[in-house]
Length: 110
Image (cartoon, rainbow, N blue to C red; front, top):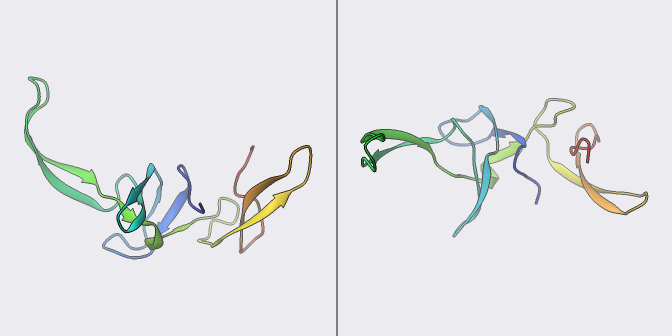
């Protein structure tokens, strides 16, 4: 998967086009994968009072955004980029995600 939880992404389409945010979670839907980004693609929902401490009213919740409508922002060059994969040789062979623009590794400290 090219997008993971904790990645900073740029929204490419929709009412929040051009905004950046951090991926909170990734969901599987009927139409493929979707990402939830706090503060982006918010929708208003009615909520009942479930207990004495929680009041009823209209709340804002983030709605999943299709994964094709976001693009990863490279932490090194701070620009939106496509994701490539490379193999690191060492004690164990492992695949890592790399930025297609600057070539730097996206996983830092792993």
